[in-house]
Image (cartoon, rainbow, N blue to C red; front, side, top):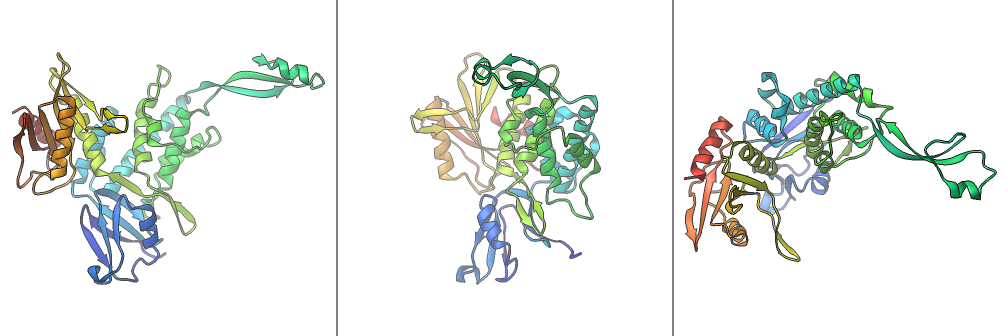
Length: 394
């Protein structure tokens, strides 16, 4: 076996490679991973070397059978896990301490995969959720509703065309679980030294033969309808959403189809801040996340977070998260939040950053107060959130 080499690039950092290094991987990165990494071709500007720059994603991209690209986070891995707890409501699943103390990014994946698999196994042992689905078939006996017109046209046919409802476990609720387990099994994180957890294989095999394997998107995992018979599926689908969102494009490596594991830190930061505020806001305020503001038939603003006064329903604060570390707010970002404020008749807008800026902003533009605040991702996130709220209401 050829040992696997891991190439590390930290968030928003770049790294140079000799012209012939990773020669099989450049097209793959260029074609499939332009969102996650920036690839510069060899030129005099790059001293005739390849240059790769991380664009704020973390995780693993399998490049060749021997080489994996590791997009290393700046944020402490344990805090990434805590952000995920809020963003995907994992805190409702009552993780034990073993799940919280993650030292490596792959620990997060393995722990959550193991938890999902065990919960699927428990549900399968109790009985998977069933629902009635419409079916049409030719039968030798009457079931449901006979297709009268078909019977009149073909009176010689001894089989009757019937429309009926059949109870089955092969429904979307369970198909989402099967698709997610398939994604996990094909992840690039698993090696001979670190194999797929047995619980994942057990859960996957438990669904095989019962559930059709179909592809789903992250949005298919949310906004679903639940009742007292499948209420526990809401948490299962929340876990599934994490894996479906973090699976990038698949590609062949040798004789295997491999999936990367990638987390969009900018999106995670925005979702984390929103979900933290949802739980911690004082009662006189409520919030809406990514509420569309229609300016015209072809122009729509979508602020990250709007905080409203509960009594008047008037927009009190507009927050826009910026997962980057500049010295000072960019002019275009300031212009953007001012446009949000004018469109909502709001007098306070805040740009939220994960680290303190060298030149923070707190100024009036007309009658609109524009500030930069920090919701830090260093240290204890609960303490960071409390400090953020204190500054917000100052």
